[in-house]
Length: 164
Image 1 (cartoon, rainbow, N blue to C red):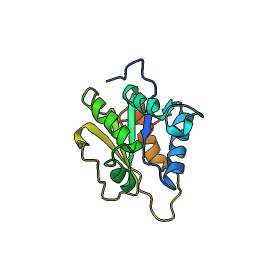
Image 2: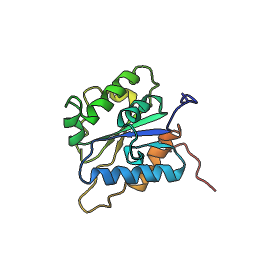
Image 3: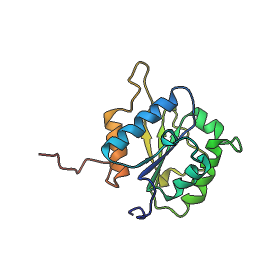
Image 4: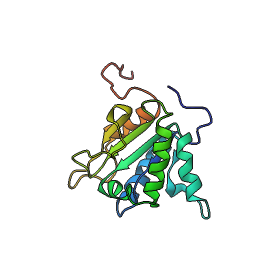
């Protein structure tokens, strides 16, 4: 199902701020932006822009990506934290959205723990767990899977024709 035409962003990225994670999300947002997607990411907010208004815009995004690590899982349950507020927006919007609207990126989360509200059948999951000594940026194959999902293309490329 295509996203509504009035969607503010092609993809909105929700994550918990932490040392190192901010940079990883910034790189992901920049790569998606360079591919051609409009990206909702708090790092693009200008001075004086409302964070609450920005968080509320996730419900009109074509897709929402939630970066789930231990920090996200802990802060999701801390009332009035930024993660908790975004989590409330996601829960309210999820019932009215098509399957595939929400994507989960597991990073530093090898057991692939999901938020309690996440039903795997409605969510596309991406494994971005970083191995010791690996580059900080998402792997090219994972990034391709994410952009295919953002473009409403099948992530499974088994039936795809190679470009010639």
